[in-house]
Structure formats: C-alpha cells, structure tokens
Amino acid sequence: NGDIITIPVVVHVIYNSAKTEENISDAQIQSQIDVLNEDFRRTNSDADNTWSQAADTQIEFCLASVDPNGNATNGITRKSSSKASWGTSDDMKKASQGGVNPWNTAEYLNMWVCNIGGGILGYAQFPGGSAATDGVVMSPQYFGSKNKGTGFYLAANFDLGRTTTHEVGHYLNLRHIWGDGPCGSDDFVSDTPESDAANYGCATGHSSCGSTDMVQNYMDYSNDSCMNLYTQGQKDRMRAVLAPGGSRRAL
Ligand code: ARG
Ligand code: ZN
Ligand code: CA
Image (tube, rainbow, N blue to C red; front, side):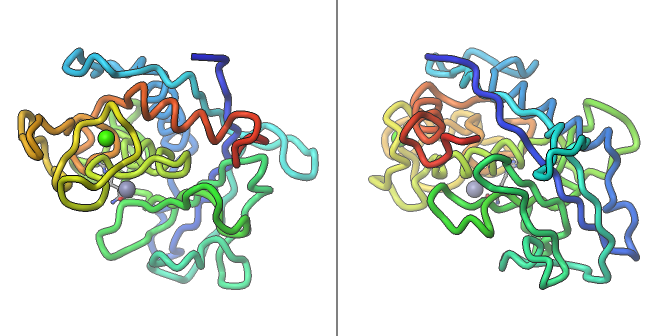
C-alpha cells in the first residue's frame, strides 16, 4: 500500500491512409484510459470475488496535458501513413522509418496505436530496455472499450480494452501468469498460482500444476470479458519499478 501514482500517457495514432477507421476517435482513446484506471484501481464493474488476493494497484493514468516543449496538449498525436502493417520490430517508434519518435520515455508512458498485423493484439517493452523504443504498442481494433461509447473500431472478444491493461502490465515488469513455460516456470509473483500454459477464451476452473488456474488474471491470454484482476503480488512488483530506486521512478 502507498500513495496513488498517476502516470502521464501520450498516444501516437498512426493510421493507414487507405483505412481511415484506424484513425480512432478521441472518444475511443479516452475509453481506453478509463479502462486502465478502472482495471488498475479495481473499480471495473466486472470485478468478482473469485480470488481474495485481487488488489487495487493504486496506479492511475491520464492523457498528458503538457508536451515535451512545455506546450498544452491533449496527449494524442496523429499521423497518416501509406504502410498497411508495422510488425513488431519497432518501426512505428522511429520517424526515420515512417513512425513517430517517443516523447521523453522517462516522463511519459508512450503508446503507439497502429496496425501491427499477423494477428498480434499488442506488445510491450519491459523496464530496462532502450529508451528510444520504450512503451507499448496496440493495434487500433483492440484499443478502447465498446462499453464506453458507440461507433468505435473494435474486434470481438478483445473489445473491452484489456489488451492495453495487459501490455501496461508488461511495461511495469509483469510476466505472463504461466511464466512462459511448463509447471515450475515462474512469473516472479508468489500469489499467482502456477500454470502450465496460456489459457484462451474463458477456461474458468481449468486446473494445471496441481491448482486452479487464475484465468481471470490480466496477464493470462483469456478473452477480455473473462479477465478482471491483478493480484497484491503483481501490485507490489509493478509499484517497485515506480518507487525511488526503481527504473520507472520519474514517471
Ligand atoms: N498477445 C499479447 C501479449 O502477449 C496480449 C494478449 C492480450 N489478451 C487480451 N485478452 N486482450 O502481450
Ligand atoms: Zn503478454
Ligand atoms: Ca506465481
């Protein structure tokens, strides 16, 4: 437990000029910020009591109101591109490659929203990586929540904003709940049960490694509607990188 930490966010929208639906609305972007705040503060309306270790992380997010030059901003940048898909090699983070350079990554959580392609919903950089590529990337059809507005460009099963909740978990040092390996692989969090693999869909009650899997955890691969918690141990791990001495303390 501790103080509320608020992380300033800049969202860089890069859309294919032939697919203007990728130029998602300010309202769709705000819906994602609202989801992050609910999920991280455990005020999400679908929070249930299945797991007693569920926690309010006391981490909040806001769109930046001041840009790196000290000017007022809405925390959103937009760029049209002829590129149809960007892959996972960080080109969207480089103006030299047609992307958009990050704002000072020590002070802002940079989010790029662009079509990654290859069925990839999003990807993140863990703490300690290169400043030039620090942040999270999501494809536009998985960014925002259908429950918080109308006319949004979203894909079924991943339309509640949990992809970004998951990627920001990685950005704050969380591993996948199954430890990316068989039983015995660690996510370095003691209050998440061991699991032998990712769970998909909504496999409530599925058991592996001698215990019930926590398929409701944001760091599993369940559908958005199946996820609803971070644990106290995950909270501690995330807050450690934001604390004095942590690698993201300046945020
Ligand atoms: N494939 C992505 C990753 O490993 C995220 C999956 C997010 N899941 C979801 N239900 N939105 O980072
Ligand atoms: Zn992941
Ligand atoms: Ca664990």
